[in-house]
Length: 442
Ligand code: HEM
Image (cartoon, rainbow, N blue to C red; front, side, top):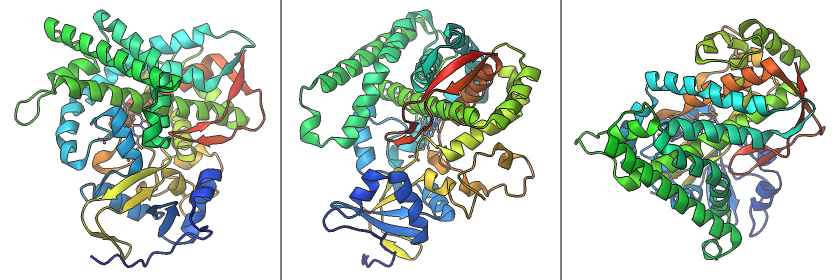
């Protein structure tokens, strides 16, 4: 295939650097400027060339054609070094088998069971708070979501050391993953304190998971947790997951679940504090449904507004704000020939902030998600969990957790900013930069 470029190049490319400076200085501003250039826009980051897809229908096409537009590109290659060949990072060739093996762990009955385990952990957090305390919101939410995921992955008492190892190692692993994504290969193997901590944490988690697997296998008991589901899973040929595959999946689920959910909750608390009118309505809902108690799985259908607040939060601040794909066979997109090996980028953030799709896109407006709302956007325009075969497997888990936590916090506490400007810090996820809030009991 000829690789003649018909797609426009984003304006402002510098000699040698291309768009690297614009992307480093203000990635969100740079991305949202691209639709003005076209539906498919060429960018250059130093030596690295890519096409950014800015049109939602083209993004949808990309996501549903996951054989041609496979997981790949520099970010995934590095993620694989850390997460192994788990469900997030595996290629199309392994995906169907892996997804089938993991799907039973996310079956509807299991999800209800996990949602029943969440309130206990939410109570631990809320009960530990004191009137007038200033909290680091992201750290609190991170501690909560890692406790929830580790305790739904491993329920049994014998698994407690594995759960604790996961909770305690998560921070070092997440920082290691991000460092791995940005640091060139020769440096990431140096024995720096961060690298050593990362390696120690990974080894500790691996050992704890292996010990836990041995114990679960020995007892043969189904604990109705994620690990039991993984151990029971068989592929079409009747084969179970190998030990190393289970380890990769556990680390993958832990990393996929924790930061994404924690940043969603942090942004939701920020947005509610910044919009007292919406907060008042949320309080009315939680007063009616919960009073001052923690939300239970059975309350989920009644927490309708809280649900829309989370939906709108994920629109404004999708934790996964940018992803890459690699073209595996010569293809064409928007009339542009894309030879195998081409890197393509999609950004849920860019799509979610399009004024064409969302009137007044920067405004926090949970009412745009009311059924029958005139400006309800098309299905392809909402991508916090991606779409197609690689859509997030933990979407319902994540949403249940976010709604139960937000409602429980709102029922008991009001959180107020202690700093005025809260800015987004786009890194491995799109998190708020230093969000500290003061607690006031309701
Ligand atoms: C609000 C919370 C969450 C958000 C915003 C989120 C977002 C995403 C996105 C955007 C993808 C697709 C990535 C891509 O296109 O390359 C994804 C995939 C995935 N997520 Fe989530 N996620 C969340 C919660 C969770 C939870 C709770 C779990 C596990 C319990 C999880 C596990 C996974 C896995 C395993 C995949 C790979 C799926 C596949 O390729 O088949 N996520 N997630």
